[in-house]
Image (cartoon, rainbow, N blue to C red; front, top):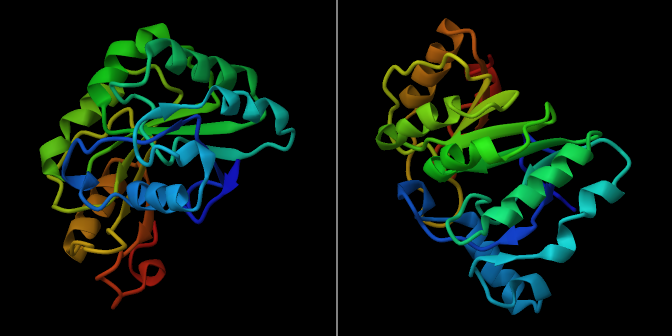
Amino acid sequence: MASTRIEWTEVTWNPVTGCTKISEGCRNCYAERMALRLQAMGQVNYRDGFEVRCHEGVVGYPLLWKKPRMIFVNSMSDLFHEDVPGEFIREIFRVMTVAKQHTFQVLTKRSDILAEMAGELEWPENVWMGVTVESADYVHRIDDLKSVPSFVKFISMEPLISGIPEVDLSGIDWVIAGGESGPGARKMNPLWVKDIRDQCTKQKISFFFKQWGGVNKLMSCNSTFSS
């Protein structure tokens, strides 16, 4: 378990580390930068840098945490990466099912693999499933998410790198939006965020604005985009 500065969760749990870039939102991946830093520091789980690795010794950790927590699963990877064995994914879901005291938030860009595997997985109420939709090119991930029998479904539009056209959010519970931060951060147009907020309001979907990012610091999110 590690504490986190991610505003919409409490702690992270990384039974998988490492990933590969799959879409434009991955260009300035924060997890890759952090993994290489941890590798240089000699952290054993990152001895292979950002190569995809499964860590059996980490799988059971949530069972040891008695205090209920909001847990972001694999902040340093994508659980549905094509190099993660299906049995390992099923094992992660079994642990989440048993650890009912916690709420688990799983986020993926590989919505096709998610949709393909959904019928093989246990879906207790404490597992929230989300997909990243960073631009209009990836709205198809929303349809994949809708096909999943998750009790709570959410969308992360971060880093938001384009406007998102009017989309049908029926069946979606929560939308997160935010700009990109860190080296090379791309600019986010405030009108993109306003439009998403308005879509959520119109369709009665909960909306959370996370941050302006590295190059949009002239406006206050609290005063401008409260939902």
